[in-house]
Amino acid sequence: MQDRNAKSIPRLPSLDLLKGFEAAARLLSFTKAAEELHLTQSAVSRQIQDLEQQLGVPLFQRRHRALVLTDAGQQLFSASAQVLSTMRAVTDRLRAATGRQVLSVTTMTSFAALWLVPRLTGFARDHPGVDVRIATEPRMQDLEREGLDVGIRYCTAESAGPNAVRLFGERVFPVCSARLAADPKRPLREPTDLRRHVLLQYDDPEGYAPWLNWKSWLELVGLADLRPAGSVLLSGYEQIIPAAVSGQGVALGRSPLVRELIAAGTLVVPFPHTGESSRAYFVVVSENAADRPEVEDFVRWLRAEAAREDNLPAIRRERPPARPRARR
Image (cartoon, rainbow, N blue to C red):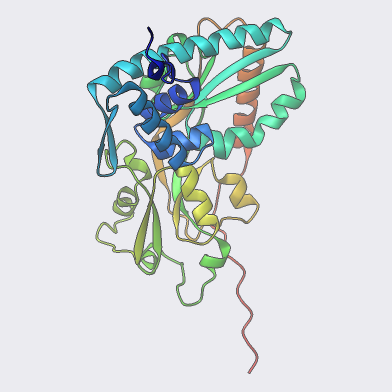
């Protein structure tokens, strides 16, 4: 006779639990997984707890400000990543059979949020039969293995690969809100003035992105010993820029990701010192997708948008308007 309690426990975890686990395991962060899945951090944490209870084994070692996969977690991650990749590929083929083309693009969350997504309406308008699916991932994906069509990578030319097409480079410079730049009690005229301000920092304990670190920029301008009024650590660049816009501190702007915010006056460049990155943005295409017309159209559109960036005037220092003096 079958145990009734066994019926209440599914033999396989639900797809939602597997999606939450796969994202958390790939990013090694519940917070970043939640951003990718458009959930709250607590929701992803509950999904992982439910999955661990169903399986009866811990999947993560929860350390201070870090996640590490257990042996069981490594096994499940390998299997779930393969299953979800297969499911996405099959789903794309089924959608394509209905007459709509599905184009899958992988890139970094910051690039997707600040540059790609705001421009996608232009591509969608000109290609109404193409559905663009964006998968954000901080690490470079194997396009063939993951069933992806296009990758937009921020890396060196050597890492991009022989068939990669360079879109544009990147410069790094301080940016802040116009209101903060106009604060008469804490003027921002020279880099030394940063000592009176909070610096919005990219939380990068492993040192994967030193060019986005204030320490590197301050060393570049000869202020390695400068001590700011405070620092705020944020886990994603797409969080840093909204914090700068709201006046919470000074951030390191990345051209071209913040160019339109500067052009609109939402952000200002208090002083013109910039640092050049040795990396650039490249687009690569999967061998399996290279001959598809919608993929060719998308790459052509990316190159056209990148060319527009190159033709724009150089970002320069914009002084906020002076506040009128109060009448006595």
